[in-house]
Length: 354
Image (cartoon, rainbow, N blue to C red; front, side, top):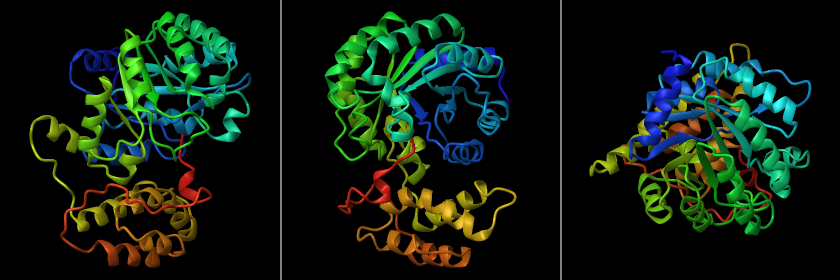
C-alpha cells in the first residue's frame, strides 16, 4: 500500500493529535532499510517509520536504496525522511527533492554519535554549534512544506547546552522533536537522562518523543509517565523484540502483553535472515551480516553471554542456525529484555546504529 503525500501527512497529523502515544521505529543506519521495515510490519510495527539518514553535501544525490524505503513503502504507515549534514543550500535542495515523494515529514539528524559523522560537524557534531543549528533550522523551516521534525541528543559532551537548544527548537516551530537522553560522548553505555526529555516536554509547544533504552512495553510506559512525552522512538529494542510495538498497545488497553515463545523467536531469526539477504551474496557474508542483528537479539536470549560468544564465531548458515536452534527450541515465554553481561567498552555492542 503506497501512500500519496497528502495522505501520508494526514496520517501523521492524525498521530500528532490523537492523544495516544506515538510509536516510531528509530532510524538506524544499515539496519532500518526497506526489507527490515517490511518484516517489522508483519509483527504489528510502529505507527511511523523513519528512513536511514540521507547523507547531504554539496554534490550529494538521494541515495537510491534509502529512497526505495519511501517509494516502495509496504507498511501503509507514514514515512519520515531523515537527512544528515551541515551544508544549508544542500540541505534545502535535498528537502525539496524528498518532498516530491510520499513523505509525511522531513527530519534533521542532530544526534548521530559515530565519530566519522561528528568529526565532520554533522549529526551529533552540530550540537557543539547552536548558532549553526539555528541557521540550518531557519532555512529548512522555510523550505519544508510537509511536517518538519528533529532528532537530537542532549548535547555533545555536556548537557548544559540543551537549555540553549530548546529555545532554538521552539523559535523555528518544528512539528515534533525526538530526544535521545544521552550526550554524543556517552554513546549508548550511560544511563539515559530522562529528566532532560521531561524538560523538553515542558519547554516546547510541539510533541516530544522519548528515545533511549525502551526495552519493553512496561519500560516504555514508565518512561512516558516520567517524561510526559507524546510517544516513544524504539531502535535496538525493536531489533531484539519486533513484538514490542503490539505489546505496548496491549498494555495501553489494560491487557497483558503476550511474550513470544522460544520457537517464535527462532522463527523471527529465520525470517530476518531471509528478509535482509541480498539477491547476490555469499553464505559467509550473509552470516556475518546477521551477526549485526544478533548482537542485539542475543542480549535477550540467555544471561551468561554464551549464546553471543558462539554466534559470533559461526561462519556457515548451518552452524549459525544450529546454535540458534540449540537455545531457542523451547516453549518458554521470552521477555527479550537485555541481560547485563558487564561487557567491556571495547566490545562491539558499545557501537550502535545511529
